[in-house]
Length: 339
Ligand code: TYM
Image 1 (tube, rainbow, N blue to C red):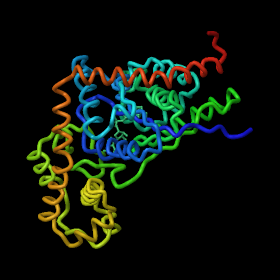
Image 2 (image 1 turned 90 degrees about the vertical axis):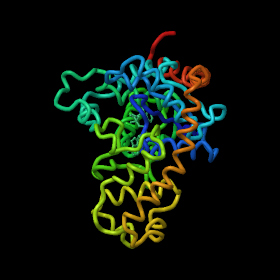
Image 3 (image 1 turned 30 degrees about the horizontal axis):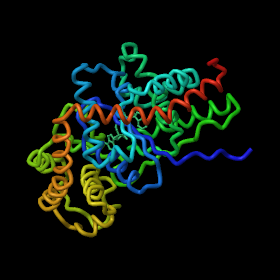
Image 4 (image 1 turned 120 degrees about the vertical axis):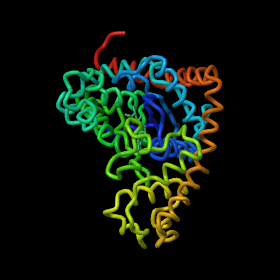
C-alpha cells in the first residue's frame, strides 16, 4: 500500500502555568515564528490550559496567564490571520482524543517519562491522574491535526517519542496508516536554555530563584542586572566552542547570545575569543534588551485589551476545530464507535 501523504503541518503548545521565560522564547516562540514565516507549513499554535491544570492553578491566575501566553505568541510575531492560535480547552476534540489515547497508551510508557518522575517526585500517590496521563493528551494535541512537525525545546523530546509510539500502536492495532509519525523539530543553540545560576539545570518558570531566569515581563534594567549577576567561571572565552565543553555556565551564555543574534556558536566564539566576562556580559545584556524590549512592550500593549485577546482565541478555536473535528470523528469510526 502506498504511504499516505499528510499536509505539512506544524503544531506546538505552551502551558499557561506562570510567566514565560527566555527559554520559552528562544527554544519555542522564536522558532515558531521562523516556521510560520518560511511558509512551508500550515501552523497551529495552542495555549495548553488543560495541561496546566494537571497541577493546581488558581482560576483567576489561569485566566490571566492564558491571556499573557497568547499575548506572548502575538508579540513574538505569530500572525493570527495566517497561523491558527487558540487555547486548548475551547476545542473539545483535544480532551476527547486524549481519552481515546489513554486507552492506547500503556501504564509502563507513562511511568518511564522523566517529566512525570520529576514533577510527581516522591509524592506520586498525591499527584493528579491528569499529570500521569499528560503525555497522552499531548499526543492528542498533535495528532488531532495530523501534524507532521512539532518544534519544541529539548525537554519535550521524550514526550514526542511517546506521541510517535501512540500513533504507531494505533495504526498497527487498527490496521490503518491513519496517524502520521510526527517529526520533532529540536535544535539550534537554544534547544536547552539553562538557568543563570546553575548551568546544569534548565531555565524554568518554576525555579524558586527569580535570578535564575529572564522573564518575558522583565524590564531592561532587570535583564541587564540578571546577566551581570549570572554565574560564570573566572576564565575568559576560549578560541572555539569546543573549549566550553566543561564550562556549562559559560556555554549557556554563548548559546543565548548565538540564538538571539542568529549567529552560529562558532561565529560568536571567533568574534569574542579572549573576551573576559566584564566585556561579554554587557554585550549579551545589550543584545538581550534589544531583542526582548519590543516584545515585552507589545505584550503589555496587548494585555491592556483582554477582550481582544479573547476574541482572537475564540476565532482561532473555530478554525482549529474545523481541522480537528473530522479527524477525531474518523478516529472514533475506526475504533468502531457508532454515530
Ligand atoms: P512548556 O510550557 O513547559 O514549554 C513551552 C515550550 O518552551 C520550551 N522550553 C524551553 N526551550 C529551551 N530551553 C528552556 N529552558 C525551555 N523551557 C521551555 C519547551 O520545550 C516547549 O517547547 N508539554 C509542553 C506543552 C505542550 C506541547 C503540546 C508542546 C502540550 N501539548 C504539543 C508541543 C506539542 C510543555 O509543557 O511546554
